[in-house]
Image: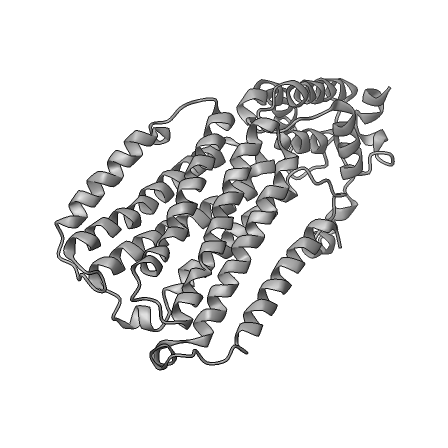
Amino acid sequence: MNRLRLNLVLIITITLAVSALSLLLPQPPGADAREFYNPLATSITLIDVGVCVGAAILFYRARRNFKPELKPAYSLLAAGTLMLGVLNIDYPITEYYNLWYLLFFNLASYFPYLCESILIYLGARQFYKIATGKKHWLMNIPLMLGIAAVAWVIDTQTNHLVGSWPSETSHDNVQAIVLIPVVAYIASLYLVLKVWRRLGKEYKRAFGWLALSLAVYCFTSLMIAVMEIVGYDNWFFNSRAYEIPVILADVLVLVAGYQFNQIGLVTERRYGFIQRLLGRQSRPVTSVDIIVYVAGLAADPAKINDALDKMRAITARMPAGHPLELSQSDQRTLKEVYVSIENYLATSDPLREYQKDKLRAAVSKRFALDQNRSTTFWGQLAS
């Protein structure tokens, strides 16, 4: 088991252990607290805490795979998920000691998503700026605050339950805290999706999981805003069903953190069961395989399109369903394509730093090219 998987297993094991141990806590000291205290809710919240802290560790660990300019973005993601986890500890403490009547603890329950959404939004801005080299109107912080303010004004005009707040004014003020995450998560999701569409294959899975987690966070923040309007005295809140999207979002962000750590890891090409069953594992490595692999490492595939067009011209004339037969001229052309992509990765890739010798070592390991040079241009390249 590699170190990354070991870290993931430890995160999950410790999280589940702490959650299970919480079920052994004695009943709350106060009669009022005992009436409303739910040991399972505390256990679930601690899972949420552990998953968020674990995700923060993985995001911070992923910084090593990227250029220094991107490290602040990962640090912001790590800080956001860490804040969400740590601040969520407030909930079981408040419930265990029945502290909901205190304004501080009531307000504290809103801070986890407020802090996380702001930090993730700042991280998403960094990703977009570096990955695309452009600016977007969603990166304008004063404009985002203006949108949140407009949403808050509209919200104050709606009919809603004041609930535990002492006055309509205090309820309206709290709604500002509730609506900022809605705006921040939606903006973050859009920016991350724009980055996801632009990036190459190497990054698709990680940014896809991050976008999926942000989509669920959007739903969660909207859910909280709606509950503030309709009130909390309903089956959805009392049954703890609201915890489902909360836990789901945090699990997805943990998976995203894991996938970001996978970027840059090189493993020898292996075939799945179906491929082995169909006999595809016997197909020798070709020069096209090498080109496709290194092209997938490019953060901005559009920058290497001209080089890839030369490969496409070769593969387009090959009959479908037949083994790929490359002439010496084709091999020379594909060698030039590889060198062109290699130069781009070593000098111009916006996200990662590549060194030509390490890149070639990675490609050689991926395809076991010490045994497959005869079917590719690799022998010519190495010479």
